[in-house]
Figure (tube, helix red, strand yellow):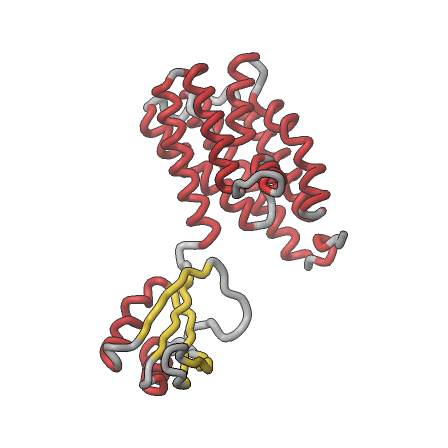
Length: 288
């Protein structure tokens, strides 16, 4: 197994550690200052920890750390040392944060505000940690292992786990709290997606047109984006086709559509989302 974390430049290693610490602290704030005092749950191991903490009277941080211990070892064996150490750091900071905030006065007792802002803060924290190569919950690792033995996807297994947890919360905290927990979980889920992909999510565009040269030049001149011409062949006609490929931000999608519509209204145009772009010449050129 490669110790990739040792080859990281010091600046990137410090950035990763700092990001995971900040993300774990934010999740701890979202849980201990918004959700738990209002008897609202998160999903996964944290949700189980909240229920056990409520029933036993023990502090939440102890359960979060203890229940995640098996997943450090599993993550090390199945995913890698870097992931396991990043997860260990995140879980440790999360546990300490919840312990330190346990007796701090709650930010709000309004259920709707606690649900919305707790979900947002929690989602930002989890998203940051995932983006920098760690995890704050062992459920995902367990789902990955189970998906190899059962005919369900990782996402479906996580959904099954959380349905069970929220159903249990209905019996322990009441069904209205279980429904608020579902709302908080959904908000956190969407925020995690935004944090991981970024607000400037990129899109790839595929254009097939007989006027490929004019469209490519217009994209370069008017949008400031480079293009790549790919060789294609029509399956029905057997004709050679030039396919234009380029990567843009979602804010530039409307302008690209306008360029293609103006030069060739009958052109084939397709978009797909890209979560990350590295290398090449994606940097936007100056346009005049």
